[in-house]
Image (cartoon, rainbow, N blue to C red):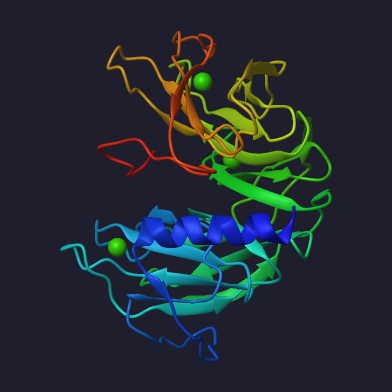
Length: 303
Ligand SMILES: [Ca+2]
Ligand SMILES: [Ca+2]
Ligand SMILES: [Ca+2]
Ligand SMILES: [Ca+2]
């Protein structure tokens, strides 16, 4: 992924946040610094979740230029507490918030694009963290670029899916409930998978897997069987160079739809869901230059 493209994404995220970059200070695993309006260099994405179990959404932002993630606890009035920076490895891009070790406390899963690894940052349940562990034994390929977390095999433990940008694969790893993972499954994707998400697309109560392949200009669906296996991949065309996928029912027909920003088409593709994990042909809506991310309005929470 060209560095210039990474910078463009950072700028886009900054625009979303309404924040301005500021110089960073050295940070440690347990320290807190800066007001929430300050961002660490290179914010690359945003994850929303509840880190301290107060039912108020919190933010986690990976900072690709400095190899850290920033956690900001929500105050419930739209403001946030002091930023906590946690070092995580080289070029983190996305982050997933999930309970990796089944202790009931939110943890972070980060894919480090530059380090070709995935790390788990284990939480204390109050918005601070006590340990960083490199997920071992996973066939992480070259350039892990996106990560999603959920229970794919129904055992109550968090599993993860990691899109490997330069390997055209997605690794699905099944959590043992203690932060380690069992035998993974490797799924083949289109070219340059930039995004992966887990959601129930067909209403059978089982998580399905959605990816976007940048060079193939497709989004792919792997319907989950609920036991950690998947139905064969189904590809659905998007506009030119899809970058991510927002998932939700945008036409209120009770069926899940896909919304895909197309980086080189300056458009967003909307794929109306049929309710069975398949989708109508895309409908493109023109937007500004180089869209990389979209959220479902009015509530991105939990989507
Ligand atoms: Ca919270
Ligand atoms: Ca935990
Ligand atoms: Ca599981
Ligand atoms: Ca499903």
